Length: 155
Image (cartoon, rainbow, N blue to C red; front, side, top):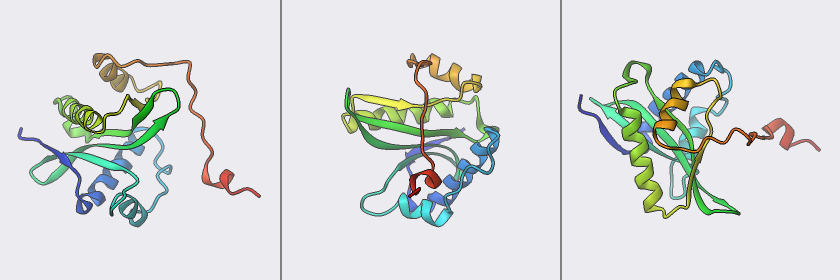
């Protein structure tokens, strides 16, 4: 297996988008991805992309990704947020997730962040096991809160 780990190019984003849809199926939420491909590509391109992607590529096929963005913590300062780490099901348990996560750590160092943060579903035992092997702190006392678009625009 010869896997190339690299930063995504704008032309990769349709394949990245497909992988995110595959993740939604795995998480039993096939209707949750509502951003269009056009908006996804626009938001990830240009001089100031809203997110960045690292891809794992094998024979010109993207088989895994990490999608992340930079943020700020009032307690910790500069941080990076990992939104998704996905490896196509046919390529799991081959060390690709480890390669992607290691590259994300390198990006964290390049950006001189003080913290790398992400969420994991409490039922996703393979992911939890993976993160435990990385010596990550899994903080059960924190609850994810969000306001969806329909609630943001209430008058």
